Image (cartoon, rainbow, N blue to C red; front, side):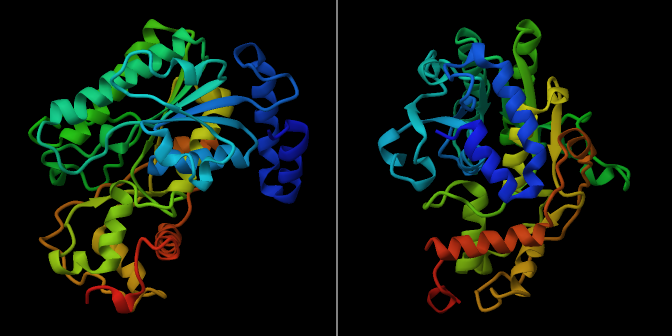
Length: 368
């Protein structure tokens, strides 16, 4: 149980760059005692939904490192309770589609980080498998937050809710930079169902807080998230993409021609915490992305000219690249104080972690 006057302060003096983190946490603890079962001398209690996800699990580790007391919701507690990242974390079983299933986990919490949402690349019924879990699940979490008197929620959305548009992106002005003012409004169930689910879930959340003004909401909109996972199993599309790239599968199929912004998972986790700790973050969304967009081949080339050059990396793109979006993350820099890592650093750290954890074999055993 990290004491604010103990472990956080010791940790901060061991890491001088974190000195600025003391004041927000102390303020949060002082202001939210009435919403938490914690005593005045203990750190705030928070809950992370979908804690077994790629982003959420790194967020759990980040919160622990900062001295927060952490709860997490997963669908199967037995499956995850022995993961190292969940040591000292109280896990609860909850279902996005089951009303009230989050209430026990949220009781007494100072804040909720809502990360749970479907991110699947293959589906047969997009309304049932993507839209309803994303929208109804978000509203279920927000209702539980209100019912249990949780005052603050930080929601994980995506640049998929921002842009680029589903169609005719290559017709946009060459200097167009997407920001928090943009919304992706033309994705449909037939074309871009995942992107549609992210927009509709975020819209539903903003509408909900209009009707419940005592709930403070901040939204994080990351682009393609990369960087080292903390779980010991492959989790999510981001991880599976780099596993396929390193083990030779993508060399057979070729890289996708799509280009997208990228952001380090550690920066995404940090932004969630700062959105909670920063009063000015309330009522705002924060785009987190590299300014430039990358293709899968760009990522492969970062690996190719590194210690991973012996791996069977892809050497061709399946079709021509038509468009590279650009993103503006100035708001996150100004309000949250986030300085994004270079993407090459993120890619190399991710690859090292995948090899270290056994998710990717040594190059001599991969298919060439």
